[in-house]
Length: 247
Image (tube, rainbow, N blue to C red; front, side, top):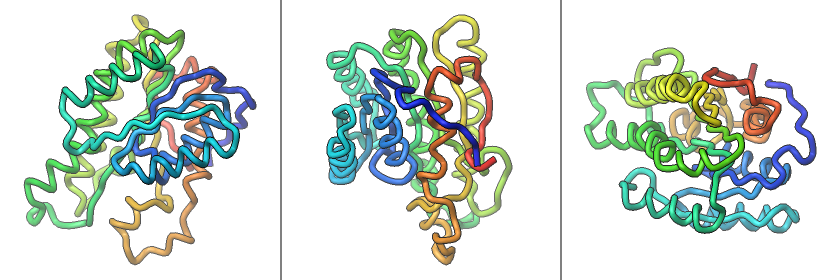
């Protein structure tokens, strides 16, 4: 596992937007960021899940979070602009963005995947990450130092059979990180990095591998250290790099 001990106030007074915040890695990082002093903006599709995370954070006495329900599968420019306008009106900036939401679907040969399934997987994993990063750019520029993290996958660094759309989408995310790094390097306060969480006990993993025993996999909470490191000031020199949560 990635080893890092975060100072207690690592993210004090930071404003951080997290996608897929209702469960899995999104929920775990939201709790960890809030514990470290951040005001987290919880973005997800299911309001009840977001409210549950909100309640966990509030009951723990961490900074009060915010909830912004968005369906990344169907969101277009108006929804993204509305999101950004709301964050700007409330906070005026973003210190961090964690593009974490993902969808894999069941494993299947590429000959049998439908166009709708293909587009859903690319939209949720790749296009939504691009759109959020693009629309949030002015808010990130308004911060002193901003960090954008993209959750990718082992499938983003090598090809796998029977997961054509997911593999292509995650390779696209890794390429997007490199493009943003090259465009922003030495000209912006924004750093961008990717994290491969590796296999862990999440709903995404269960949907793809239903016969797998989740008890044999790390829990999302065990993967938090790398996400804390990349969001705080200890990683100010990290830019355009690939990290792995389990190495």
